[in-house]
Image (tube, rainbow, N blue to C red; front, side, top):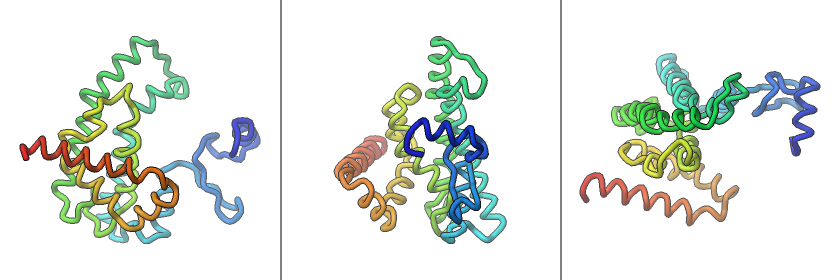
Amino acid sequence: YTDPNQFIAMKENGSLPFEQVPMLEIDDGKHRIPQTNAILRYLAKLGGLYPKDPILAAKVDAAVDQEVDAFLGPTVATYHRKYGIVMNDEGLAKTAYLIATEVMPKHLRCIDRLLAESTTGWIADTEEPSPADFIWVCRLIHYLPNQGKFFSEGLGRLEGFPHCKKFVDKFMDLPQIKKYYNAFYPDEDEEKENVKKARTQAANEETGE
């Protein structure tokens, strides 16, 4: 949709199966696939990035589902009325504090540990990036640094999570990813380089280098 009125109309006329976006239309609208992770898995299978091995596929699914768990708190706190929850300012502040100091650090520790154990540098230990890597990178580079009410600047820079930092840099250095960002965000090259330098500096400070 291109404006809010069109979105409302799509909700009312049944164009959106779950009355929300995103939704992927296939074959001129013959097929409609809602939900971010369903779309991600579908596209990954088309692109050959979804493992055929059932064990690896299950590990990918687990990491994708873990992303949902990790960011459920911030999502509910941001859109609390959508979930039938009423939060006053005091409750929201307490929720944000717990997310920033307990919930998110715990989830990042888990992902950092998976990456430390990975022999390939990808979350589910796949040979190539999987849907799990795509969705986690988006959260780590776009969501964490831009949600100041939930996360400190240090958490946004992944301070204390060295394997997450290496993972982000590995992903962003992929030629296909560079090509995509250069095409759609040509003015962000310098900013991305500054982010990478900041991560490197933080990593050096942690290791005393």
